[in-house]
Length: 338
Image (cartoon, rainbow, N blue to C red; front, side, top):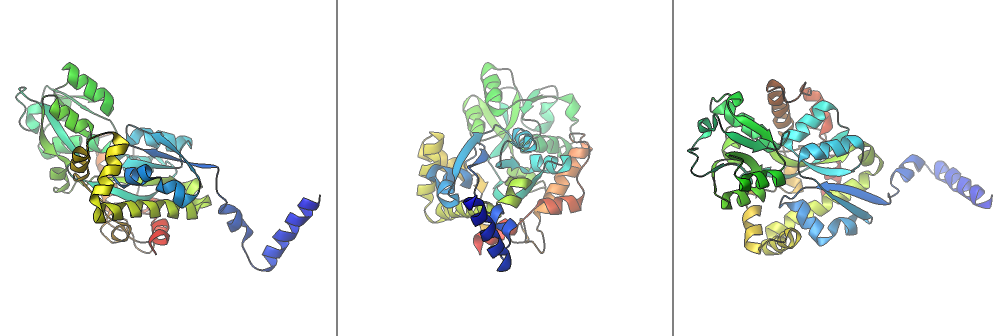
């Protein structure tokens, strides 16, 4: 009874002094934060390897590994993760499908980290040679998007090839068995397929230069972000710190990724160079997320992707430009870098 009176007294005092009690409760920390990540050598992995999120946010981090953005979308829709990494294609699809999340950060712009790899000796030298061949890619991913873009750009009917939906581990196994002719996938599966008798004929960078940008972005479950905005800002602060480490002490960042992925440092360095990682201030420019007052180029990139996916009948309907603008929320990043 005394405890209850004491609590009521505190609330009355806060109200009398103008402190928003709802905001006080909103900033209370959860028991844990669940983060969905993928095996991509970017700033998330640097922060993870160094334990920076736990230190900065002051909560237990429950790490969940996913093989593709499609699976992250499913987990987000189910409310089983709080923050996750998805490619720009799954992000466009997720926003269009009404998955309740916000885009809060751009981990990386995909350059040479993803590519179309083909089996040597199959007579495949360009995209048109894929007619009649078996091509694998994870459906709903950035590589699936770029595979469809490649068919369109080079004038090939995708129905004339057999396109198989495979997650990277399954794709590699099928490749090693000799069941595939080609695959559009990302590192580290990409290099393993190259080493197992493959050659790259089309990197994602080439399609990005034609106006079809792909990237990896951080999405936060809306209910979580609205309840714990300070935690989201702290999460982004750790990611920004990771980008800073990679720029100022690249070898330290490389060591972190190599240890996390259990690969040689030279291989970690090679994979990291295939990505472009902008820092927080750069992301708040017109080139990427933009600001709360004026969104940046990421809006158009996601809208163009959604429209393309709708045209290919990969999604039912593309989100309106206004819906995509609202789904990109730079406010947490603005707080993190100020």
